[in-house]
Amino acid sequence: MKESRQYRKEMVFALDIGTTKVVALAGKKNDYGRVEIIASSTVESTGVTRGMVFNIDKTVAAIKKATNQIERKCGQQVTEVVVGIAGQHIRSLQHRGVLIRDNSDLEINEADIKKLKDDMHKIVLDPGAKIIHVIPQDYKVDNEEGITDPKGYNGVRLEANFHIITGQYSAYNNIKKCVEKAGIRVSEIVFEPIASAKAVLNKEEMEAGVAVIDIGGGTTDLTVLYDNIIRHTAVIPFGGSVITRDIKEGCIVMNDQAEKLKTTYGSALADKLIGNQIITIPGIRGRESKEVSQRNLAMIIQARMEEILDMVYFELTQSGYHNKLIAGVVITGGGSLLSGIRDLATFHLGMSAKVGEPVDKLGHGYQKHLADPKYATSIGLLIHAIDKNEELPVPPVTEKKAEDTLGYTPTSGGKHIEKKPSIFNKLTTKFMDLVVPTVDEDEDL
Image 1 (tube, rainbow, N blue to C red):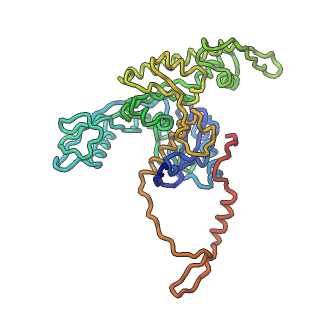
Image 2 (cartoon, one colour):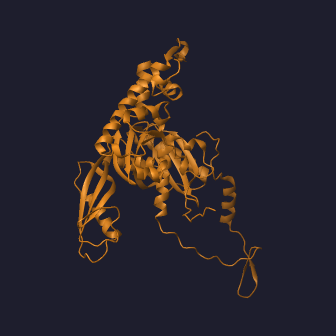
Image 3 (cartoon, helix red, strand yellow):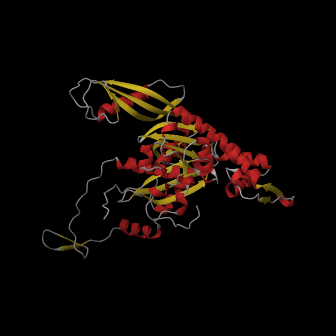
């Protein structure tokens, strides 16, 4: 029988502010380490372009709408969230840090490692840049190299290689400002590809070596992992919205019609199509309808996807891990739903490819649409929020006064005093009777 362990039961919240949608999630970890999603909400995003906020008021309105919906569903106020950040302003660099210790007789501890990591925030960056993540790659203690965890070692000189992810301070601050204007505190801002990797990868893939390609609405994000460590990250400034625009211009249709053509009839491989279906698009206000060939549609999509994958290939070769990724690539995000994308990626990147879904990380009773690859980033942000909550100390268990089964509290004199419910408890009970703790699986978000 599988044993369960105790996890913190507090509900946590995550917010994915994307180019096409804003997703808010509430959840916690169950006794078996899986994510239980208590409430979810998806609303249209109109204030973000290619992962960057350009209209604060519209973004604040979308955040308020999404968080208000999950508050009603879970019966708890959203006070703080883990929120994602992406966009073509993101950069990464490698840097080496050194810490000279005062006493080599003392073993290296967590404080030494933290000091070395914190020192990375003092390095000189380009004007307007801000450090988002500092990820250790490996350590060196005196003359011993290739150390994964230096705790317990003795030495004077502690060195480490770091992968540092930066972004524009203005873009970072705009996200923070939007969330705070919605009346919510930002617990942490996380680079979205890191969140996506948490949602779709297992331990074996991360150890063997794998690249996660997250094809979102505004950008395509790349994360390379090897030996359980993030080795390389990149943002490609093209995503699903650019493909929609290509279809709009190539087929001379409206933007909504182009999006529907892409999601309903689109394919990333024209040669894989069986036949050549003709799609009829109604004209505007009685005008003549328009016909679009499915093969021509696929050729438009394939041309842009090949360009995106060529950029991914360049980043993989630049990372130095292209020939080391035993697990190949995992494609996720809304763009991964295109027919033929796996075969096209395998051909262009020269390695195995699969579509990644967050279903393996979800506990019982989740809504089926949340297992869709386009929610991978949102689920990953919630996982990060849960992991962050797990690092907090578990609150002490307080003993309750003895109470018999009839609701009476015994006194020292042996008499019983009836325990009457307070007005607050009565109101709380009535309120909770009205609250649905989980989202209906059939509800259309």
